[in-house]
Amino acid sequence: MKELPTPTFDLSPRMRGLPALLRKPLRKAGAALAHARPISVAPASTPEVSVSPVVLPAAPALVQPATMREAASSKHGLDARWARNLDEVREAQRLRYQVFAEEMGATLKAGIPGHDIDLFDDYCEHLLVRDLETGMVVGTYRVLTPAQARRVGSIYSDAEFDLVRLRHLRANMVELGRSCVHADYRSGGVILTLWGALAEFMGRNQLDTMIGCASIPMTHHGLPSGYAAASIWQQVRQTHLAPIEYHVTPRLPLPVDELQSDVVVEPPALIKGYLRLGAKVLGAPAWDPDFNTADLPMMMRVADLPSRYRRQFDAARS
Image (cartoon, rainbow, N blue to C red; front, top):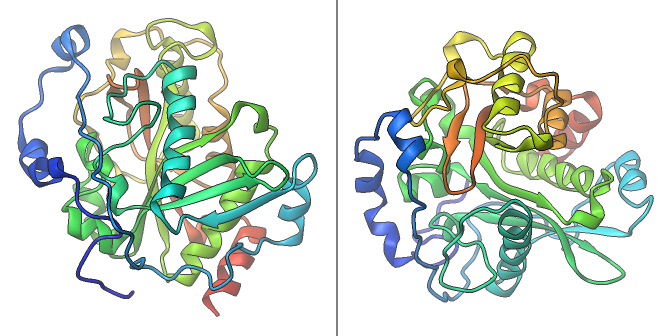
């Protein structure tokens, strides 16, 4: 993988303090749940865009298998592209704010009103799905590559989990985050388009492992106080728990043993999709006070993907 001396975007001023932040001891879960306050994050400075440190497709639009293109285009004409400048990144950040803050009630205090911006955005590649008719960004992922993670010194999930057992995977591991889809486009086509683009990205860059935090709202399906999250954890640990050598430990655990966990409830659609793709759950959920969610640590390896996604990965590598 090509190494560059600078990140994709200039560093935010607060980035320099990140290693110290991650070394600070965490409070006990009970006290944190009662007294936690949202973390205020300074916005990214307005940067000059530099060349991406990873191999992006030569053509602006990413190629998908025919079955995926048909599914994605059944209602809307969709196009997946990687952000090439700050304006396009801002479009993704506005969609994230709309979904996370306005719909889900997350506490986001970025310096630009109406945007979700955090310390890692400067380093990530941002995948956008547009409606070809309106030009609107309707879905997004951000991807932190191994090269960029080394420059930051960590990944987002390091702040939520002790990932020491994944050290041997980091050289070929990307972190997926901030996934969201516009409320009017949640029939499945957008997420298929995103996944197809991610499969090609992984193949082009010789990467084989994806990890990330999959969120469960604390009031999922109207159930209060994390009951849904505790119940979903009890379900998936029986069927999709990774081998013990991949287990991680939450730094601020959701107190699942103190919550009702026998409620019959379906996981969020994104988690169900990950599980169908062969993803594994790496351990018990952490509590994210900013987003008021329970975050499940999940890992997806290219070797475990269904054949239609593997074919795209293999084609990109050849």
